[in-house]
Image 1: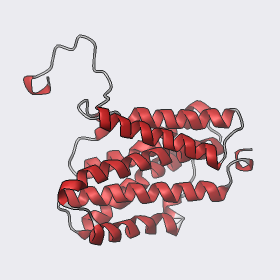
Image 2: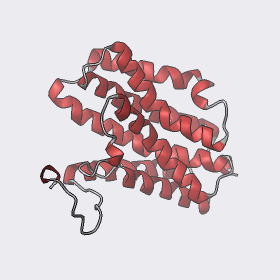
Image 3: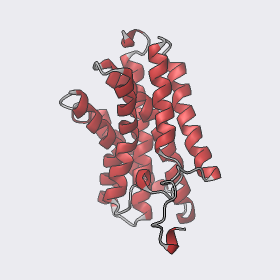
Length: 219
């Protein structure tokens, strides 16, 4: 059983860590968009809980953890308070958003994969839900902030690929019965570092082969 190598307390701790860093990224984006404190809280909650909420609905973990664990609800509010008083200077906010988002991406892809497997999904679909868990909150955040989700934009650095790598690593660790706190942290860190490298070096996914419909501003 998965719980023999990945205890519920470790799973819960990983979830809370991911919720916190995703909430930070949501609240920071709200600051950059000049939202008030309520808007900051909404974006923090949506970013932190959106992917996990969708995961729980798919696997039948109802009511979702977001509505049964008070810590899951309060953690984004704590992040909102911290950002409200301690947000970085305006010129640094965008970079901070991306770094925190990358951290949340790494943590959530592993947490989502392991929880989906615990609820009986195959390794393949567990990895898929790991991606959904990692990227779903960020997509919801961008939509609420009236931005095209980073996941869908060709002019943004790789976003889904690092999460896929982290989810796949977690699935492989489960398959070989090697999943534990240390190895899961390595999988999360791998996704995090890949995301940071993609931002640093401008790595992007290819568009359609021989694409001819580009407008001048897209070239």
